[in-house]
Image (cartoon, rainbow, N blue to C red; front, side):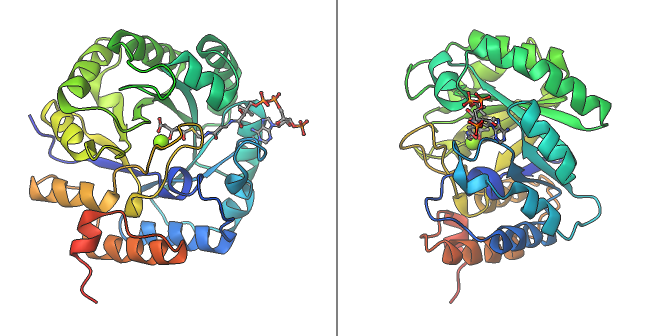
Length: 298
Ligand code: HMG
Ligand code: MG
């Protein structure tokens, strides 16, 4: 049955911006994060401490963190692929970090330059060190509903990587449909397999909307009781290592769906929609949220 409330993880400032070709001012990133927290989002992925040669747009993570005016009750998180990233994230004062692997070998190789098994090994000291520092670690599994290089992905493979990350100490596993190619029954089958290894209350859906299926897929998993959703304001984004993949499901669209279902989010939709319009204008991008467009009155 449907959950009473959903915790939203806003990934716009990270997943949404990481793929922008033109370098975005640090001040714009900071203002985006401030506007998102004002709209009621309580968990914001603010930066990425990855190699600047791999993802140049995220090179100013430390400056973004330093420039934030932190709101109480908001978790400011960042991606950390290795110890070097973790140390930088800790120095920058992040509240939480995330490690990331995938269900597909070829995607893992393209994204973080190692095998799935090597990625898990690499995360052992990262998670240990984060825990020493009193920081929680989230774990991402990418390509859970298909891979740009390998095609179909077995639900059991997603479950195995999810289990490994959970057993290493990740408190939550975020299931990424990186390519946005999934459909509802496939999403349910995937969740069913993962749930045998990781409790449902520790699972999040991180769906990209490339094929326009993200809301349908989310609804399918909400019906199963899933209650943590990653989304990106204005539907921004795309993964640099998944060519053709478009943005995450738009936070505005998710909030509209949830409120319509009577599910609590704590988000002010009008303020969120205004933020989506603002950042789309800043990036000179057409607004990629249907709800955002519908709520545009001027
Ligand atoms: P590598 O080249 O194998 O790493 O990359 P290395 O350890 O050999 O180091 C090479 C160079 O990178 C060295 O510099 C290191 O210092 C530097 P040099 O001596 O040559 O000048 N380096 C770093 N610099 C800054 N911060 C670091 C760092 N680590 C090494 N943390 C590596 C391996 C993992 C670093 C690289 O592949 C990488 O940074 N990948 C990140 C890719 C990425 O960010 N992808 C997008 C995020 S994932 C995503 O979007 C999916 C998700 O949204 C879920 C979904 O939708 O499915 C999460
Ligand atoms: Mg993503």
